[in-house]
Amino acid sequence: MRNQASLIATKKLETVWDEETCQNYAEWTEDDITYRIWFEDAQSIMAKLNVMISKNIGGVAVWRLGYEDKSIWSLLSTYSSLPFTDTAQ
Image (cartoon, rainbow, N blue to C red; front, side):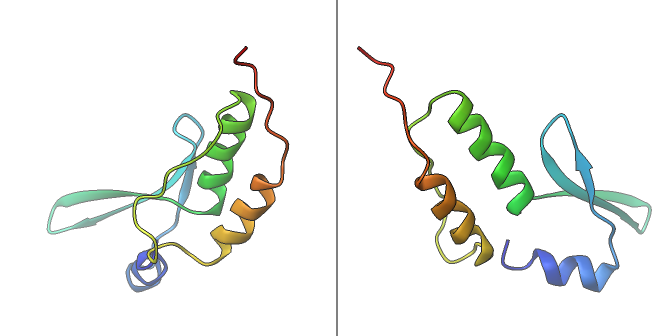
């Protein structure tokens, strides 16, 4: 997440939302090679958090702290205040 904004700007990429994977991606071609990169962002994190809530999953894992966009923390904070229903009885 840390470097994706600069990559998008440098290469003048358009991001596209993929409904099936619930992630944004961008494509470009250099030297006859087509590159596709997938972005984790607030929109994709929100989609994952919605699944977490709908499936009653009690938490999330983070790959590496410090690489995230700072806006993700307010999103996580909002979701952490939602009620968790314990269905294991």
